Image 1 (cartoon, helix red, strand yellow):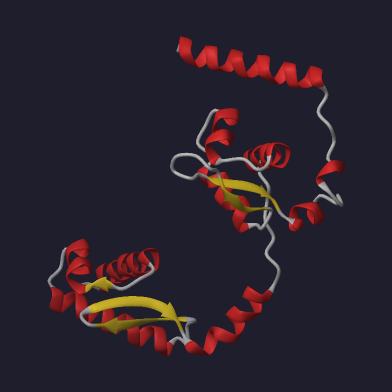
Image 2 (cartoon, rainbow, N blue to C red):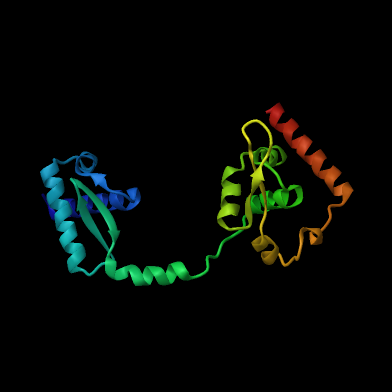
Length: 192
């Protein structure tokens, strides 16, 4: 095999192992690069040696006829430094819209949020829970016992309000305007 071809195959194997994030069977890697298992194993072992020789932050390990890319133990302290730093997150328009619905309608179910937004809201609600701005507030006494969501103390802290009563009140004319816009949007979707 030519050096250029081996280099390309190593890149493909590296991409597979990095992307999968868990161990990948030798047979699957061999199939992906269209080579036999013995050749594939030889290429991976050469990669393992290169990673060690180049003092890289990652390594490839062999686990019961499978291979996995992982971090070298010597790098853990650096990872911990990063993990200990406070997470910064961005509140997109979708997240802000979902958060506003939860803040004003709480306790509220995902289904109620989706009825207001007109689209699925699983991802947005999950992100808000991950960011600790929203949490589970119990379950509704209804079929399926849907989860009720509400805001957290972190929400109050981030938006500099002491209680939900300090949230700006919605102008009834604005609410009516929002309803009309939503109805027009629904009608447009039906017409399409």
